[in-house]
Length: 167
Image (cartoon, rainbow, N blue to C red; front, side):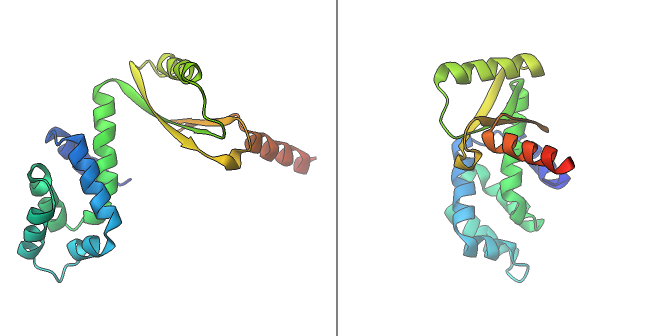
């Protein structure tokens, strides 16, 4: 994520655009490559892009999208939405984490993981993203900020292979 995307994400956060509006906007732009290409095309006049934006998107986000389009950074819109989400998480004194698994953990296990993360990072809560990843073979991988805990069978096999190669 670029510094510019983070700055625009902070601005979007300060605008207090509804989360559902941002998600719908992001989905529409990601699923319509032709629309993204048109909004990113410098040969298309700004007022034409603005008319399209006014017709397709919620009024609460059209002004922001026009600025992003005029400044030729619409290609970074997904990163901008992600930066906005990170601002919301930080405001609540939460931390974002990703939990990769083969077998989905139960509610008690997830509660224990969240509690451990909260204590370790001195946060009030955790925005935990659950991602099924069968290639792990078993176990889990937990990513919090730049730190990764790999307790998967795949990770252990890779570590074992590295140790054997060194000998």
